[in-house]
Structures are given as structure tokens and as C-alpha cells.
Image (cartoon, rainbow, N blue to C red; front, side, top):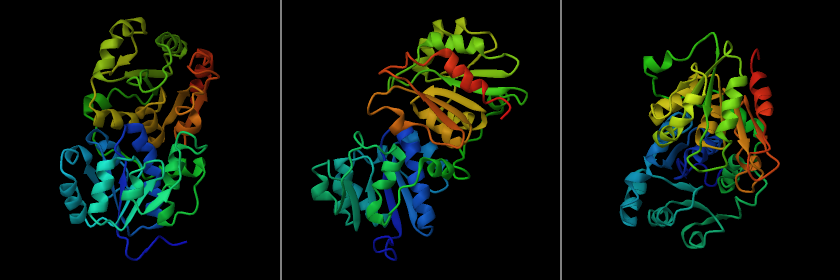
Length: 334
């Protein structure tokens, strides 16, 4: 089945104005569309802080900053869409203002979900999809929503993981003083212990025990996190071996993404840096609860070296230090 009005569609806008992890998992849909329709321009409407992630994806031709549009009138936003000659939009993250502007702009194909009442008035292609209740992974759901563009097949998770190869590379150059922290004679492991409160987190005592179990002559451990998390770590970091390097609060988001790309592995719960690591093709281990909505079925990291452990409860308490250590030690020598 060809794309709807294939010869007339030249510019698709993907609307995904939410968090970093969501944006990373949206990228396989962009890559997949680009493979199906290589001559079509793909633009991405996202928030300013996710721009480094979007810029890293070769399949995305243009970034449109939602933070620069959100205070404009619907007519003004519609004018921008017209100027860019967008003729198809996929509302992956529903937002009424953008949906109304897309209709006002006369975008020919406007795809939305039936669970948003305003999409019945603003979209002309509706897809029945409940993200929370679906058995599909988030990245598969993103592609499923593109069905009105002629997408007839939702790829397997293995296929989606492989899509990142050669299509994801940060454009930010790491400062020498940061890049030199990475050593060739050890496995450079990033531990991103917190999630800005966006998911279930493993106890810091577990991370402490894990780090002490990892052979110091084989692993070089880095702690990353936001400035806010850095303040929380002030009583935790002194409990760790002196060889551990604390980079929390010291990297810009651009630098963090680039640092992850150049490291060897990353451990985290279901948070943005976890998905960046998986997309970068480095060893990645995600820790997930069984809670519907944030479980691994929907949010497991996708990448050629990505894996996860899911607890048997609504927190991560059943995931033991030994379980995690076994996985990470298994990365050595591969």
C-alpha cells in the first residue's frame, strides 16, 4: 500500500513535544519512514531541551522548536506550518493548540488518536490507539500511528533496535577534559542512579553495593545526574570508592548525550539517558517495575546491546545487586 497521495506528500511533521526518553523512542519511526520514503522531508516538533537528541538522528531533516511556538496564536503557528509547506502531520503527542494550527494551516493529512475528542474536529485521519493499554512497545506504537501514511507493517523490537545503527550520532564534540576521563584499558560504565522522579528508582544503597562488587581493575565508574540530583548525592558519593568519578551536575545535556555515546555501558532505571545509551549502541541495562504504564513491555530500551531486568513487584526491590552485577560483568570480553 503506497503512502496516501505519495507523489503529493513532500514534508511530514512528527509532533512529539514531551520528554527525552519518549523522543528517543520516537526516532525509529522517523528512520522507518525515511527508509520507506527517502525523498520525503521529515521534520520534528519538539521541546528545546530534546533538540540534541533529535539532531543526533540522521533521518530527521529539520527541528522545529515548540518552546518558540507555544506562546504564539493558532494563526501564527498555522502561518509557520504553511511557510514550511508541511503536508502531513502525525500527532504522536496530542496537543490541542498544535492540532488546531495544523488544521488552520490546511495540512492535507492530519493524523491523531480517537482518544482525544478534539482530534475528531482537527484531524482527518484517526487511529484507535490506547498507549497505556496496548501490548506494543512505545516505539512500535509510534509506527502504528503512522498507518494512514501507508505503513502496513509494525517491525519487531529487534528490527527497531537495528534501525539505530548508523542513524544515531550526537553532533556535539566532547570537551577534551571530559573525553580524557574515558580510558581504553577499562570498561567505562555510567551509572545514572536517579530519574528526576519520573519512574521507579533502585535504592542508592544497592548502587553502592554494586559498585563495590565490580572489579576496580576492570571498570571505571562514572556517576551522572542533574544539578538537583548532584545536591542529593552529596551524602552518597563519599560512601563510594575513591576511584568513582562524579560527573553529576557537571555536564550540559549536549555533553551528557555525547559522553554516553563514547562510553562503554550504562545502568539506569527507565529514564532518558537509558534510551540515549541504547540508541548509541553501547551496553545498556534498564531496571523496570511491573507497573502498567511504566513497565518494560512498553519502555524497554532499544539497541543492539540493550537489555533490561523487570522486577516482580511495583517497585525495584526484588532486583538484587547480584542480578545486576552478573549482567554487567557479563559485558566484559564480549
